[in-house]
Image (cartoon, rainbow, N blue to C red; front, side, top):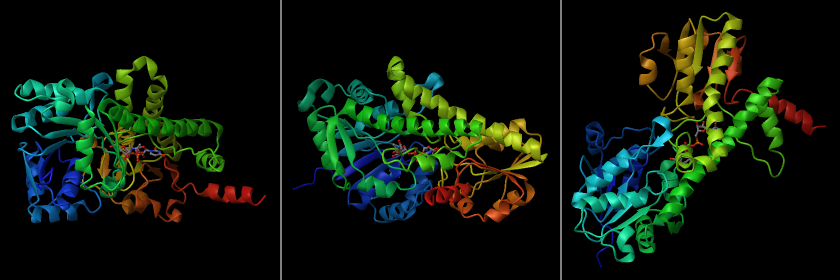
Length: 429
Ligand code: SAJ
């Protein structure tokens, strides 16, 4: 019998789409990857990748060499389509669905009866239904499940990605997936597709519930990080080491406070809670406040660094790290970039930036003339003020003696190990 899904088309070859395409290709499915960026398409067809993610290069290279993955700039006819394009927000934190809409409309001309369309992009509640409407507008010869239910010619579902950057290939296969269908049959077919590659459970629900589940996961994390960040402001005011306080509080069996940092970055947690706030502004004061607490943290850190530089009479400041979190190259919404730009603006001297995962400064910093990308050794030797903004491995491994005599603003608690001593002292009482 012919398998249900011989060929799939993945639209958007970014942090989620490319690994998804490669994983399906590695399971023997014929995959067409679509991206509007010509450079990305060319690179992938040469078996290369444009993003830093462990083992992705090997998997993409294998899939391209075996003839199972091909990139192109336009959707082709397939048994299933997976949309994995960005969903940013525009001014006023309004969700911007332009990329999802144009992906849906671009695949409509090649849609055939029996096809399955899945939206993996994180999106506001109601978007999967809107995709049905856009497809129906393009193809009045086909029926869609928002109107035709179980009898529709084409099935449509939402199955949000849940992978953690840095562990994408592992989590794609092992994580449970939430699968929300516009009709129950849409959800069942979607589960059948993911079961080709996913070892985790596929949990079926409605499309709207799946949309809210994904947004809730990231809002939950944002609210919890905001609590840790608020504690860090309180502890700073009281002259208490927040890392020590949190480690001690977490010894309570029902307390698990997350880690404070310089702010929350990335394309997900710093963005998705606004999708809830936009749909239910009066019902989401906690979620909105958490966003503001996290967004306010870079300004607090900037002030601390400037105060230290003034006290030291510093002529240069070392900023360690630009990515939004450790050991990746992604700088989207990165608080480290915000802080570095604010320092460059307010400080008369030079800002020496160290980012081991990037050979160049991002656009937001490259035009500022008092910022220089340099090596860790150079930044440490020239600066009396050291700001640790990202806990990349090479910074974690730094010998603390190299920091002697310098003012250190450790936003990640990486070098604040004085509290371990305090905890031992408490334990021994
Ligand atoms: N952060 C803290 N303190 C913490 C944990 C994180 O300040 O205790 C900061 C990080 O430094 C970073 C930001 O939060 O700036 C977000 O990092 P993250 O590791 O929490 O999450 P992301 O954005 O890399 O990935 C999240 C994940 N969602 C959840 O864990 C609920 C991932 O599973 C999602 O697939 C991804 O968002 C997404 O694409 O939505």
